[in-house]
Length: 182
Image (cartoon, rainbow, N blue to C red; front, side, top):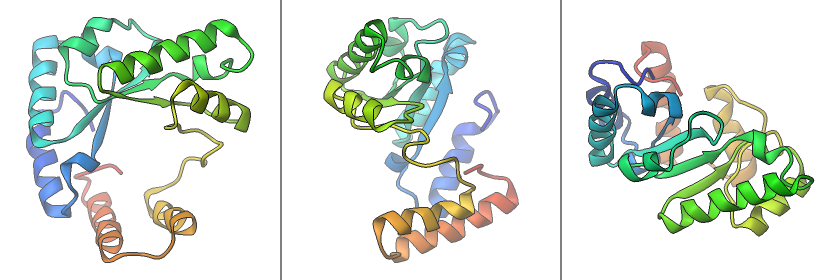
């Protein structure tokens, strides 16, 4: 999704309604660059998405022009800690401290922290020890096409439910129409 797209909030609302996906299950990622551009429009859009119940994540936190004021000014639910700090989280004490500080800050502000780029079990164990059980990276799974995700999910989480099948059909339909980009 293009964040500056006119009608973004309305498109998200229509897509949520047509798919039956609870808004709380949708988390849109934005970069620090988006937060810095046209802050009044950005805040208005984020507030409207938040009012719908959609969650917002700051992607690659800590690599751009991070400002703690973003965490105060914008309705952010998730801080995604950039892989640059995760690569050395086990071997570099500075990376360990930075990762730990961001994880603790997110928790103190009622946000979730997600570690990006986790590739080893040693990194995973360290992140869990630091208080970050949410992570993504090759250790969990390689990137998947939307059509392959449901198969991956069921291989690790069991049988399909009606809701899963409805979501799968909806993803296929929206991929064809271009309304959403799963």
